[in-house]
Image (tube, rainbow over all chains, first blue to last red):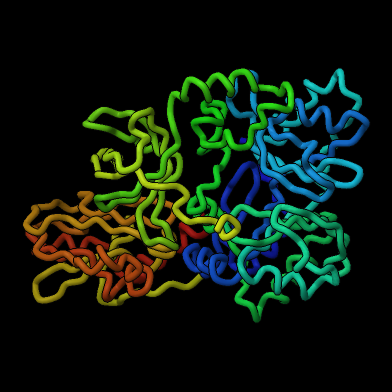
Length: 367
Length: 132
């Protein structure tokens, strides 16, 4: 087993009673003594701070940077203005996922945020396709720190530490500014279903930024939050997570992500396969399930219809906000239709569930 | 890390507690167990009337992150279950030795209770694992 990496905040997490677990090659706090339910609720009603330094960051520079980016992912980035930030993904030519990513258009470069576990794979995949393009991809993950500050009071907290007027930032835009005297790329982005920010800044400032943010948020109900709350928050908002809802085994149409694809911008890796799936229909659809009979649906549990296994749970839990047992699952048509009665095999026992609307929790920026 | 204990209870290696009350053995999971599990979201209880042997998996407790079996500390018949846990599983976190008892067993062999750990032995058992 390879040795687990520690983020620069490891000691800070321990000092706050963080319960450390292995995640994507890192030791990260799954929760603090407050517990995942309280942390989850803090983000929905006040604010939460997450150490997400395990995420990877690449900078794409060069004359052909835009053309290259058009080619390797489905979104039409020519329509992105400087300081825009957008969700996208990378596909293999058969249309399955390499990873999902966030793209920021900066004045002189493109900033790409990738999943921790996929950093090397993504770098290799992108490099492989770069030969005929005049551009460079620089892995800045190790020198960049990444924190997420999320929740309705995130703006109030962050504004205490910066002169930059956060009120003028639209959702999914970015800005370069000083935060607590630290040069920071502020993304009005996040993965919780709430408004908030993702902060990128020099790695050696991690402890200072972490403590100053927690201090600034003390009177706003800001809590440090662990991986469990991060997972339950993104789950309720039905934001997919690599390794669960998306992987090299599934594709964007079934994953409900074909809205990301721009079909008119010209060729991109995976386009033909994804378009074919869009026209013919995917093998399986990602659906929301609500348990009709009590029980906690968990990842990998089989989903059955009339006693026959037809799919599997990708993520499931008791939703802290909605107080229901919910799951995301892959099932083939026609079982993906709303109100279809299915069963989840919970520790081998079939429990009734039904297909319900996604997202379970409507992200505030979509209301 | 310090945990709560009940000096009247006996303890299993699977972190259940068992306490004799009016000839019945009341059972639950320990403060240490609930802390390890973190926020409990679901409890599945046994059927009243079921005959169980010591060590049988008879209930399930699920937290945000994990599912764990709860084993019968002693043999006998399940004569009562705590239905309050079905609607309020968080009681397991809040009051593991009190309001969050799981089930009561009419014991068929009360000497089994004496074979379980007392509080001092159980505290040592936890320390060993914490250092593990």
